[in-house]
Each structure stands twice: as structure tokens, then as C-alpha cells.
Amino acid sequence: MILFSMSNILVITYWNFKDALIQTYTLPYVRIISKKLPPESLIWLLTLEKTPVTDSVKRKLMQDLLAEGIVWIPFSYRRFGLIAMLRWI
Image (cartoon, rainbow, N blue to C red; front, top):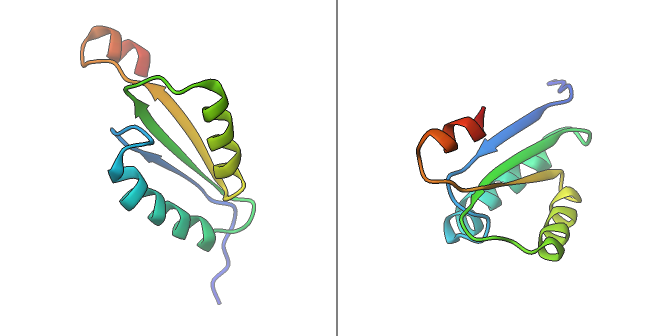
């Protein structure tokens, strides 16, 4: 018998949420993992958004994903440099 305690997982991607790689590869696996975790567990999905996402679309996506135990963290993309490094800190 395997007992699980509450687990939280952080998934960091370099792509934006609408990218085909996220939609066809990453998100299906994140959903499978989410179903295998205890109910109170969360998966945090951080994406780098290269194009702005409207607030209404962002809110809808966040609600839909949260219902599956996934917390979406859209992070604004910046080219590599001093400002990008400071933002990550």
C-alpha cells in the first residue's frame, strides 16, 4: 500500500500557454499527473507569455485549469539580459 501526503509540483516551461508544444505534449501529461495526486494537491504551471493575454481569457483559463488541480502562472517574457534576470529574482 502506498500512502501519499499532499504534494505540490512546479512545472516551468519556456513556451507560452497557446503554443502547440504546451497544448499537445505538456498539458496532457500535467493532467495525467494531476489525476494521480491526492485531491488537495496542486500542480503549478509557469509559462512565459510572449504575447499579452487578455484578462477575460486569462481568468477563464485559470478557472478551467484550477478545476483540474492546475494553477496557471502566466509570466511575461523578456529577452535575456539584466532586466530579465532581475525579474526572475
